[in-house]
Length: 240
Image (cartoon, rainbow, N blue to C red; front, side, top):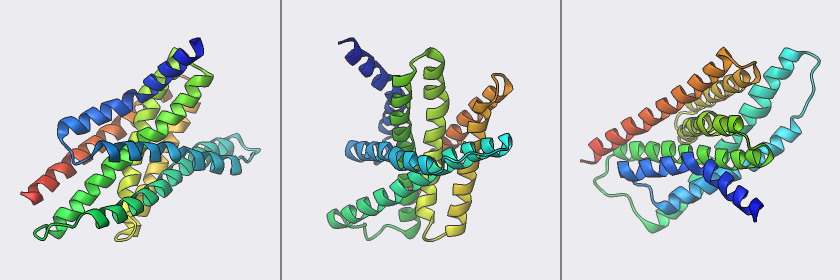
């Protein structure tokens, strides 16, 4: 019985960022159904597994400590997680676009700019949710192994924010791949770099690096939120 309560507490704690995002979408009245939200959340959780497989395949050792730190933080963790999110997002967008084509048609009076902005808004918000879905499963697994206050705080306020923001950036890259592959590649590269620097800061002794990691996570998330809100305003302007 005690184990069941602990599991419920872990799941609830891990879900706090997800609940916050869902309430934000509802209050902002974004065109985002609860079914889409849950599917994106599940897709984010599913992205955790290919990342684990890739990380196991890239479990190399290095004689140089600096090379080992760089490879572990930027390639084995950041690169594999972002590539896994990108893969899941591409599959998710492909399936949902096919389903939406069968169930609805674009309005005749919708402009190309309006449709592009709506598509980008959907990509940004879906990426954010997928990032938090990834973090939810990862956090639940880590807290099940080591449930202490420091780890809990790190996962909820630092890492979850970083995963959500990076998911948002990768979501944008996913819809850019066909029309603007260079910009998409640049966005993927910078996302991996941000994620890698964040990981590197957490590897260092407590102090300024920890503060830097916190600032990276918070600033990246704030930037993602501002981008979503600005895209939503532009979409509304075109739809008037």
